Length: 111
Image (cartoon, rainbow, N blue to C red; front, side, top):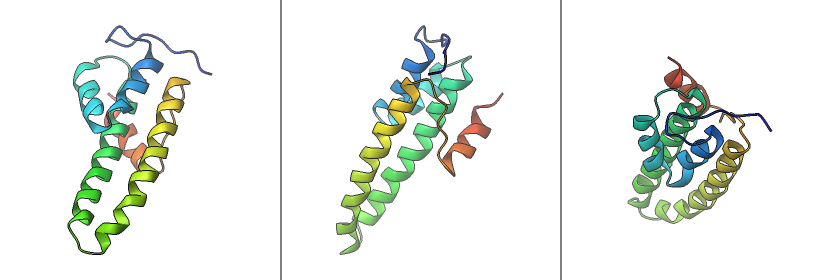
């Protein structure tokens, strides 16, 4: 486990990182607005926002298409597993980067 510092929210970075994922893109956006100094927290907030907002939009769009809408349910199960993994990694103080989204979040969270 990596040693983490304090975020500008007053929380430990690993706890703030976990909270970025708690309510998906909602808490991701909240921490993007609130966090001022921690690159660790900004990274997890951006990754949460991009990942879960994208999954939400894809699910809603596919949900409107007949027959294909039935295929949306596995997305929610996979999203739940991904959500748990990302929260655990953030709590462990790890900067776990998803293949495509992680690079996007990395670019957006750097000063």
